[in-house]
Amino acid sequence: IRLTPKGLLAFEDLDRRATAEVAEQLAPLSDAEQARLFGAMEAIGEILGGTHTAPSFVLRPLGPSDFGWVVSKHGELYSREYGWDENFEALVARIIADYIERRNPKRDAAWIAEVDGRRVGCVFCVEKEPTVAQLRLLLVDPKARGMGIGARLVEECIRFATAAGYERMMLWTNDILTAARRIYEGAGFALTKEEPHHSFGHDLVSQDWWLDLRG
Picture 1 (cartoon, rainbow, N blue to C red):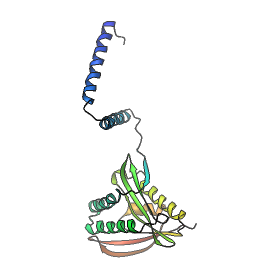
Picture 2 (cartoon, helix red, strand yellow):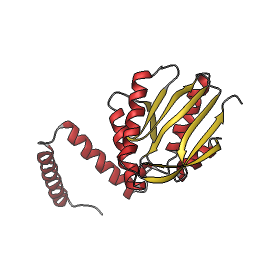
Picture 3 (cartoon, rainbow, N blue to C red):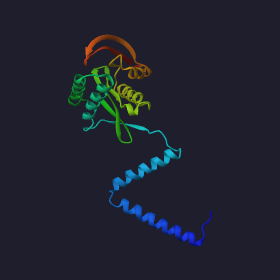
Picture 4 (cartoon, rainbow, N blue to C red):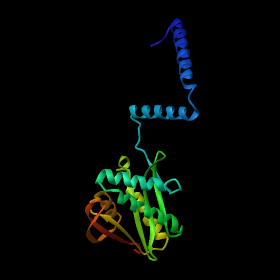
């Protein structure tokens, strides 16, 4: 299709007016708001154009503002998915407080998983005994599951524990946490003990899992 000279002039006039209208709408927005808007428009174009790719994730060490998130996210998630009461959130808070007070950077570490700058997971590696590390507080937000985040967090714990000189790693969990159990099995952990108990408002079966790091 080719425009006549008259049609081209009319098109150029419409284009100038449209550009002016867009500029007028964007003027009240801050640079950050404009960046968010352009990012959203780009995402729409990628999805509709068939070029959308699955989001990636990154791991980073925990910072001061992350500890409260770990506690609240555990309480929220386990209450919603398993009906656990406030005693579980209190347990997580005690674990976090103990970690902050006693952490030895050469022996203890923790990581946050992020997708597009949003926190979606965490895990802790702490000293249980001089030769034994303990994996604690593995969590992945439901919206970020299926991306391999849980397995990657566990892998990072194992890597750190091995480099720190631990000979074995253990973890404590409950049998109803089937997704986490599959991750532990996939990483080479072996179930060594099961014990019924009543905690967090429910009858549960606790499990001890162990991994030899010397191989």
